[in-house]
Length: 276
Image (cartoon, rainbow, N blue to C red):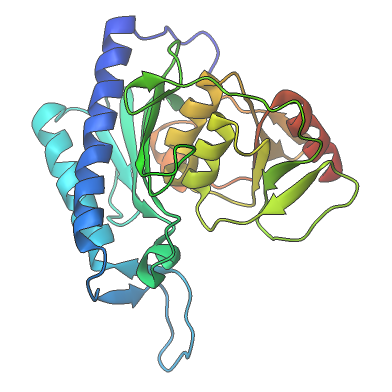
């Protein structure tokens, strides 16, 4: 992935604006559905299974259809990888959009307000822009975190700088399991949404987050936010934890699933050592 010519700043800004527009489109559908009795199915559920996992609501599918349609109008030559519509990535354009219409669907269908709509933009496999609409935020309200390569992290179109409380002696970290590791200087939180945790890491609410085997749509947009906030991203390879360089080509991105840690550099280093 080295030696890839960067996109012009004007194109990156246009991609970020489009990502924000799509996240807003998703947010409108999601908030309209709140409080309504939703049709829910479960991926891979076996007949008679009492408590299947991996729910999908009618809203998940509708949001992805709407986002794909809007992208088809504006950027018909771009590729799309989405969670709910599994189809080959058409065309050969260097830009691929990665979409998770609702990340944290189990929370959403149960009414727990921790979920997100995640939009990411990849250029030759590298995240270059992202927009995450989150049901809650550092501002105690729903809103869109967004960023582009070379630009600032923003919330609702306003630059967002992390504010560190120097009086805090123990911070928070996102983990796949809510079990404390007493050797590490933070308390563990499990939100049920990788996108939420990426946004919260970028905003400074979490120092670091670890994901067991995320999909590209879970973290593609969030990585752009964390990098804009000067965070570090590492993935687990056969030889250990290495810096993240991209998701590979179009079809590799569609199938990508690897352990990942992202956050503040020193916290990432400590968590990598703890899980080496």
